[in-house]
Length: 353
Image (cartoon, rainbow, N blue to C red; front, side):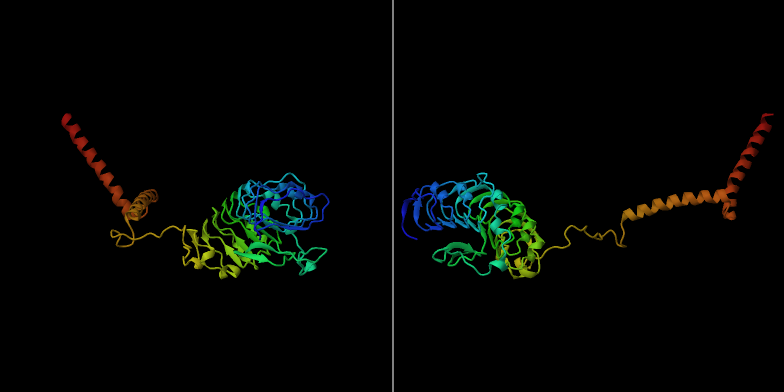
């Protein structure tokens, strides 16, 4: 927080004992010095809020003690990818590269190797802070926490966060992010991230702040997110989400600002009721021509069925001879006709003779 200008010197000596380097909020330009790889005991590197113009320094991933890496508010650019180190950033707990020019997919390779964010034993660690091992000097850094820029005057060792906001990342959120069980803050806002919200985020049971706003996310909000009991801040606004907002537990405490800008969402938070009958077949309505509750189709069907039934019954009557009175009437007519025909033929024969 001075007015330093120029480039960061590239003369960090080998086997040095540097544990923390805070060059944030100055006017440094150029690139990060490669000699930082000599700082094997470095735990905190904060170069935020400068004018550094460089690619992502993946050569830092081999520093075995690095726990805090803050590159926010600079001019870093390009994709974030690993340099094929076997276990990159094994101790990292705070990863803040927000407000730069990074692009491409989210750094899945790093996320699945963030061992320091996976299974922190909160009970055994207790209330401990990052401090210089020789002088007990307590460290402090600037982070965006729960949507607000704050200075962590003391960095508690159990605090873990990832901030990739305000870049140009695209693609989907990797499911492996659900393995960071100790994560307390996740900010992926103001990017071009697509696809659904992965169900695996519900595994982040220690999550206190989740910001996925201003992206291109689609699909429904996973119901399991309502089980995140420590979630205090949620922002899913300005996306393309649809469906009903989950009810119960923490979700009942969030306001409309957490969900606005998603035209397909509905729920009491948005004062937009969900149509639970959507998808059902509409009920038939009676027309003015169907005064008795039925139309021409049922009548025609009944006429055809009646005609078929009548023919069938007629066959039964003639075959069985029942009822006899009806059979006599119909049988008598052809007999009389045959008798009259024979009589006429006999008279004609007599005239010829």
